[in-house]
Length: 484
Image (cartoon, rainbow, N blue to C red):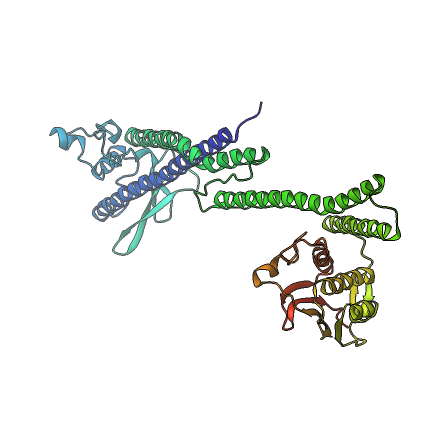
């Protein structure tokens, strides 16, 4: 059987409250028992001190302890005289010499703590100055050594000792009644605490589970494809941060879904155009409208190359996204690779009527851990982008420099440029800065997206800006290998 989190949380809170209440009960009971025993002992010691003072007076009148040796009536009378409450004969107005304190009436209930006299007679022992037994106690022997002794003094000289045999547990009726009343009070308090915990645990559980229920319902909405789902953030604790993270996740999924739809639509548009051209040319050949002349074959070949380039770019971009592109990293000089790539473009740049200006710092200490083939692909795409979008007559400028930590490479060209609002979108897939989608000047809009993935794979940074020449500035930075 599956137990819901509501039941688990409710049981946990209730059990915790019950354990705390029970622990508090036992702690209070232990603390009370210990404190009350100390109180009883202090009362007995006070009575013992009073009896020691009275015995000192008797000793001064008789000069020795012979007057009390085996004189049990006098011993009992001294006990009664030192009692904290009025004796029985004082209360009734007549003499009752043989009455012991345990026969007196108990204190009225409700007096806390009880102060009724206790029968200490059987537990009090009298010793002389040499600690020899005189009277009291169960016997002169076998009382043990765990006695509480109080010296009896006369004119500053110890004349004897009063010993009190410690009690092992409470036996006085008033004490037991008081302890019983306190125990009942502790039990009542503990029961009330557990009852209050039971009443408060349920609403607390509902309050704590409200954000979790919202998260559960929101998750089901996301599973169903409703990416516009948002849940309210009602708390500032961990559940509140989790709700906030859920909203960020839902927003990201919604954005990715929109991008996916745009991505599919743009890919369909990019592939449909060359396919439509090829179909039209082939149908014209089939209908005899056009003849298979070299110009016609060249036009078909150009569309096939264009279609192949789009498919290859899409493949490389998808492989880069999933991390499936192979990167064989070795220590290379990126500026040297850039110089070799520029040489391959010099003739094409000249044929278009553009000037290619380079300013490269090819130092031997410039060493980067990278894949040389991917770096050449990166530089090729950037040069191809500048070549395609720069009007003639125009200018392309490439600079490369490095310091002890970074190598910086920049590509900038002349007009036409792009607006500042378009700069952050240049690295988006299938995005082109120009207003039209004329393939005479524009490509599929995948080259810069591939460039960004290559730079990211080498822990570098790429950014776009406005060029002083009137076109676009692309700046790349790579971290160099630190020399030991």
